[in-house]
Image 1 (cartoon, rainbow, N blue to C red):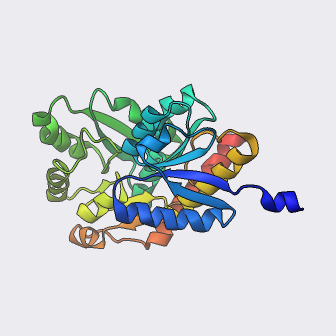
Image 2 (cartoon, rainbow, N blue to C red; image 1 turned 90 degrees about the vertical axis):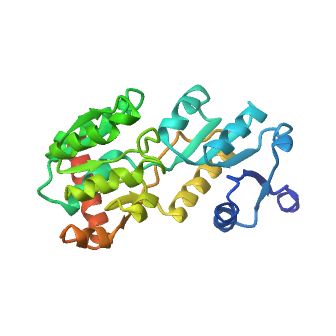
Length: 290
C-alpha cells in the first residue's frame, strides 16, 4: 500500500488557445474532471520539446499545430478542432493523436433544421471546390430521413451572393458547414441578410453564428467534451494509446428566437428540438443496424 501511495501523480500537459477566458474555463473543468490524482500543467512551446510519454491537451487548431511541430512524438489529445482538420493526423498516428471533435455532425444539423421546419425535405448547401467533400457523407445519409440536398458551388468571392440566391431558391433551408472559405466573419453578415430578405433560414455552422443571425445550431456543451477528454486520458494512461477521434454523445441546441419571430416561424423549445433530433438519430440508427 505504501508504494501505491508514493506512486507519482499522473501528469497531463495543457497547451492553450491564447484566449485566456476560454483556456481558464477549460482548465477548471478539466481539473474537476481529472480529480486530484492527476495534475494538469500548462506548458510553453519550448517545454513541449522535452516531454516524453505524457499526454498533451491542445485547445484549437493553432495550439495543436504548435505542439505537433514542437514534439513529433507527443501524445496529443486535441480539443476544439473539427474532424476535417484532425482526421489525417489521427490516421497517420493512431493512438498517438486523437481528438474530442468540436464540429457538429452535419446529419445532426440537418435534423435540427427539420425539427424546426417539419415539412422541409430539400436542403441547400454552399461549397467551394476544396470543401465539397465535407458534404458527401451527409448527402448519402439524408434519404434515410426523407430529405435530400443539392450542392451549389461557389467559384469565387464575387459569386458568393449570386450562388447563395440560387441555393435559397432551391432549398427549404440553407445548411452551413464549418467551411471558413464561405462562412467567416467577412461574409456571414451578407449571407444571413440575403437569406433573411428571402424569408429563408440558415442552420449552423456553429453556436456562435446563431448569435449573428443563424436560426439554430446544435452544439456540444463544454462539460460533455471535457468528460469525453477525461475518458480518453484514462484510456491513454491504461493502454498507452488514445481511442480514435470521436464526437461527444450529448448535444444541445442554440436558437435565435428573434430571427424566428421575424420570419414567423413557430419555434419549439431548445430541449424539444434536441430531443426530436436524438430520437430521429436513434430510430434510424437502430433501423440501419438491423
